[in-house]
Length: 247
Image (cartoon, rainbow, N blue to C red; front, top):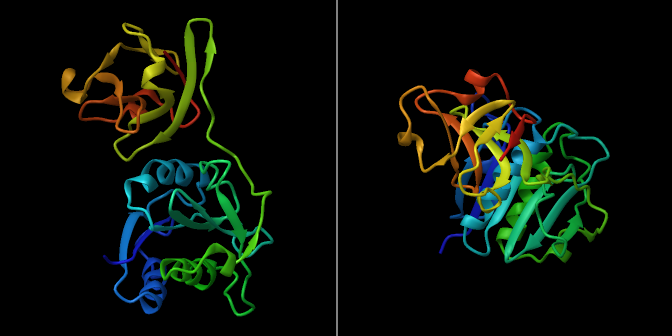
C-alpha cells in the first residue's frame, strides 16, 4: 500500500506553491499517494482550515500523514508542530489549526533550518517533516516534545432553557450555512432559526423543498445546516460565519 499524505492549504492553484510542496514530498517519499483535501481555504482562514481538517482526517486509513498549512504567521516566532493521535500524523503551524485533536495527542515542536525561506516554510520545513513521518520516523526524531500548544477550538453550542443556541461555523462553496449544533441536540418538531429568520423543522435533504426555498437538515458532518435549494443561503439571508442559529 502506498504511503498516504493529505494536503490542506490556502495556496489555491494559480501559482506554483502546491506543486512545489508536492515535488518535495515525492522526491522524498517515492510512490507516495498525495491526496488534496483542499487548497481553496480562504487566505489566512485558520478557523475554516480547522473545521475542514477536523471532519476529514479520520476518513483516511491509519498511518496517514496530514500536512495542513494555513499560516498567516509564517516566518515569525510561532512554532511549527508535528502531532500524532489514533495512528495518524499531522504537520501544521501552532496557530490553533490542530485544536480539534484530543487532549492526549502527542505534539512536538520542529526546528527551522537556517536555509528555509521565511515566507515558504510549507515547502522547506513542513513538507520535509511530513515526508520523514511518512517514511516511518517517530515524532521523537523530528522535534522536541511540547505541551503548551495554542488551542482555539471551534465554539460549542449552549442551552438556554429548552432552546439550543449555536452559530454558523463554516460556509461551503454552495452557500450552505453549517452550524455547530449536533443533530441529536434538536428535539423533534423544533423549528430552526438562523440570524432571526425562521427556516422550519429539519428536513431530510434539499429535494424536500421547492427550488429557491430555504431548508434546514442534518448535514453529512453531523450538525444542523441551512441551505437554499439550487441557491445560496448565505447570499439569500445575508449572513455568514458567526450568525446565531437556534434550535
